[in-house]
Length: 233
Length: 233
View 1 (tube, helix red, strand yellow):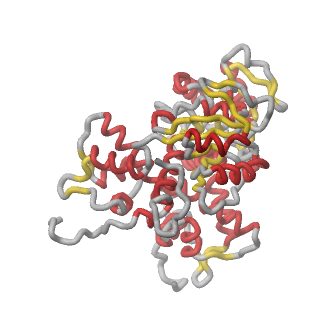
View 2 (view 1 turned 90 degrees about the horizontal axis):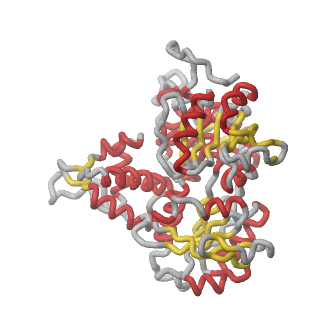
View 3 (view 1 turned 120 degrees about the horizontal axis):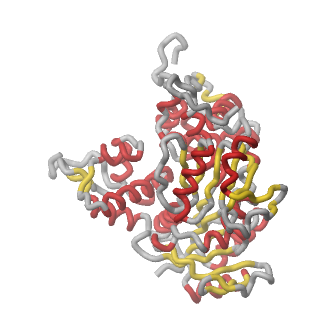
C-alpha cells in the first residue's frame, strides 16, 4: 500500500464503533499483551485473526476504526497497537470503582484478582443491610448505600459493580446514576431499565454456560475414533 | 431467492463452526426468546442484526452453519429458529452440573438465578476444606473433592463450575477431567492448561469491566449538548 494513496479503511468516529467490536477489542488486547510479554514485535491481521478465530478482514475493519494502524509488509506493531487499545479500552489509567452489595457475590468480587491489575480499583463498599454496614474487608469499611452520593464526590467514584439481589437491581441503578457514577457492571440476571446517562454492561453467567454446553455438544458428536463414552445420556 | 436455485450459504458441518460464532448464537437466542415471548412470528436477518449490532451478512452466515433457516420474503420463523438454536446450544435439555469450590464465589453462584431456568442444574457441591465439607446449601451437602469421580458416575455429572482459588485451578481441572466430566466453566483469572478432552469456557470478569470502561470513554467524549460534567478527571 502506497502512503500517498487513500487507505481502504478510513478512520471513523470512535463514537460510531459498533458494540460487537468492543468485545473483540478486549480479545485483541489480551492476545497482544501475551505477545508483548513474550517479546514479539509485530503481527499480521491474518495471524491475529487466526489466534482468535476471527477473519482477517474483520480484524482489519475492527482496528481500522481507530485510524490506520497496520504497516504495509510489516503488519501491526504490537507495542503501538497495544498502547492504542489500552487507551481506547480505558485500561491505560485507573478507575475508581464502587462495589455495591456485600453478600456472597460482592465478597467474591472483592477478592477477585482480575480487576486491580487492569486498573479497576475497588475504592468503596456499600450495602443496605445494617448488619453488613460497618464490616471491614481489606482496608475498606462497608458504607450504607445512602452515603453513595457523598462518597462518589469525595472519592471520585466513576464505575459501580452491582452485586445486589435481582429485585433491588433497578432501584440501586437509579441511585448510582443519581450519585453521578457513569457506568455499571451488573451481575443481577435481569434487564436494567437503562437510565439515559448510564453505561451498563450486564454479565450473563447463564450464557457462559450455554457457550460451554455448545462446545461440549459439538465436540461429543460421536466419531469413529471416539472410544471413551462421555457421561451424557 | 428461488427455491430451485442452490442456496448461497451452504449448510456446513456443525463441528466446523468458528468459536466466534458461538458467542453470537447466545445473543441471537436471547433476542429471539424476547421476540417469541412478545408473540412476534418472523424476523429478517437485517432486523435481527440491527438489534444486536451485527451485520446482516454475518447473521446469515452464522445461522447458515445449521442449514438453510431463512425463508425468502419472510425472514426467519422465530419459533423454528429459537428451537434450532436451543438445540444447538444445548439448552433444550437439562445438564447436571458440579459446583467446585464453596467459598464466597461458589456460594454466590449457587444462589445465582440464571442457571437453573436455562437447564443447568447444580447437582453436587465440592470443596477440599474439611471445615466446608459436610455443610449444607439448599438441599445439597458439600462433598470432599476426592469423591468427585464416584459422584460423577452416580449422579451423571456432565459439567463443572470451577470457583476455586487461582493456584488450585489447574489441579482441579485435571481431577475434573479424570472423573469424566466433559466441560468446565472456569472463574479463576488464569489460563487453564487445557487437557485434551475437556471443553473449557473461562469467564473473564476483568474484560467485562474493560467493555464498560470503553463504553464510558466513548459516551463521555464531550459534545455540545453535554451539560452535565461527569466525575472523570
